[in-house]
Image (cartoon, rainbow, N blue to C red):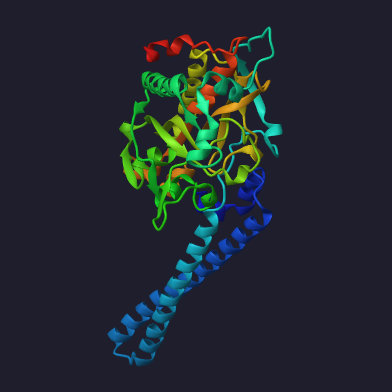
Length: 415
């Protein structure tokens, strides 16, 4: 959640920064109105409290001087009722403001390029040169079916569209990739954790998926529990409502989880193949750190995900997202896009984001410094999406006869 104190201090400046993220002007106007109403409610309470303090002093003097206090007592009692009412009005206005604020995205960093959509994203660099094929490369779904690795029809039979079943070497490669990624990340200082794939509403509110993106989540019937859309949710919330000793930071973690997304906002996109599935495997990086270490840890996470692709010999590029393409909770994001020769284009395989103190404020994650409780910074990133990595291996390591060569880095994981 954005800093409401900052908002109250300089609403116009915060609004200007949020406008770079294509925030609805009506929502900002409503936020401004509620902010003003809260200011007025606070002023009313403070004036009433000041009057109460003044009358209390006067009451004491009356008693010392032996004056009749009955009329003054009536005023004091009446003012107490007004104070109680003012406190309740202030509470209601705070709740109304917070409800709207929960729907406001994070403020983009100053160095994030201004833009409206993914077309305005900024390429940072390319890593590895895509292979030139002596034949027309096939797309992954054709290779998957030809090699018997992925069965899309049986996935539909078991569930619905955008589910698939991995067989034989396809299933083994998924498992190999998960183990390879976890080991790689562990060697980079990210401690492995294993977390639930089901979380409560508070956890999803803490990382910003709720209330805005509820339609994209799978909810358990008659329970306030949800299947996770990413390991970012349970791993970040391991420290929900905790105060962490500063010397324990940074905390760097990696986790494998299945992930579940309805992708309600992506109807008609990538309906064929494994690019956009309702259930998929992913290895995640999560970091909790102090504000002054935040940028350093961000660079470490981007390097970790990029180096992992390098180890798999997969060409990719790093892209800085523009303000209009940033995710809801992100202040800054670098996407890593892998080259897919079958599609003749780069596609996102990892997204590393710094949320600054946005999630920490919602989840109440703090650290202690000089007897003060301060908000941490939280970061997250895919390292990597397993299905998309498998797609990249199939397309980049395909042979003319349709067979697929296994990357050398994965050979130890396949016996």
